[in-house]
Length: 126
Image (cartoon, rainbow, N blue to C red):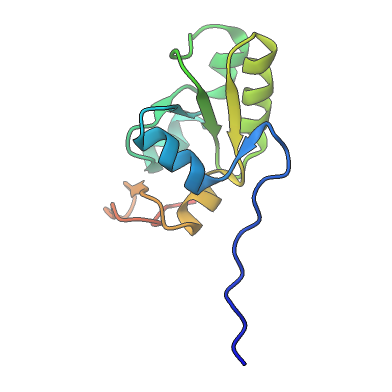
């Protein structure tokens, strides 16, 4: 008897959102995807439509995040967790995208890989 394919577990932390749900909310215009990786990382692989705002600029206040529900991501989800917590402490609505760009790409969501010229779902220099 075949076993059904395992589905990724939904985030158990209410301050987190899974990549597929994040993508759906961004496409629906309900949220803004905020890329908190460093400029070099952003140059190598980017999620179409994501707003670049490196974590250090966010934490020092040298850049202002856009309005709306902010869905933060980095490469693996650690820096974006810091960013989401920082934004929430400032009273801004923010959720961390669980697993970051790695999970986003693994879910087959769009990533533009500028190092290889690929622009399809799930392809990234990560």
